[in-house]
Image (cartoon, rainbow, N blue to C red):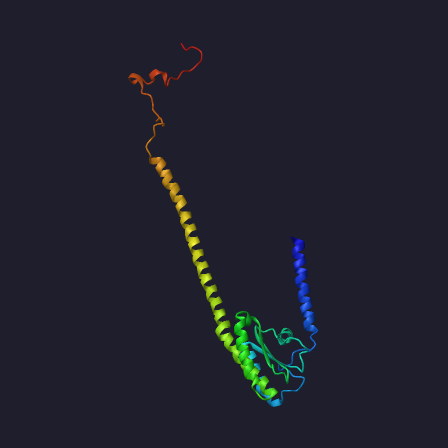
Amino acid sequence: MIPRLLAILVFVLSGLAITRAEVADFQYGPRPANSIFDPLGVLDSAALGKITGPMQKLREKEGIDIVVVVLDDLKGAPPEHVAGRFAAAWSSSLIRAVILHVPGNPDSPWIVPGGELTDLLHPETIAKDTSRDKRLASYEPTEAGKVRVAVEEASDRLRYWKATHYNATEARKKAIARIRLEHDDKSRQWRIIALTCVACAVPLMIGIYMLYLMLRRPGSRRFPDVEPPRRMGAPHAGGNHAVTKLGPPQS
């Protein structure tokens, strides 16, 4: 049993070490301060101003983290995989999304949500909603406009999902925990009452039984203590209580 536990522990630690190594060796370096990675300079100062401020407020006030990544080429990798690598390296929020954009690509930008929130949603719901938001962003004529609309749509979508699914789930968990706590309290109270009743009933039952033994009529197998009567009123009837002393004869 112990060797198996040690093997499992070594496996888990090895996995954590590999994960940390992959994050540390992330080829794009640390996360930018403004949460926007744009080495191509697609976003000008005006676009950055419209995107950075709302993203920062959304992260600080509502815990929703959005990262924007602009690349020149995905090199054949699936967009979800690329976005997942950026999310794993740069974001640990429970509610997050990566906006991945490749200028000139007709399928761009991609909106890839992640975190604990996505575990509460059906995959078809995620695909349907993100496809709609992506389509709205693709209608913009400029590359900067596509990224801006994608960020806005992703922000609204995550906020909506949080309100309708995440908050509802958290409230349901709290309600279940509260009901379970109340049930445990009632069960504890009933156990205390039952133990108290038993503790009081045992001495009472013993007392009732002793009283019964004292007051019950003698049975057929019980012989009462009978003192034999004296014969003709003699003080020593039949020698029952005769006393004699042994010694030399007295004159």
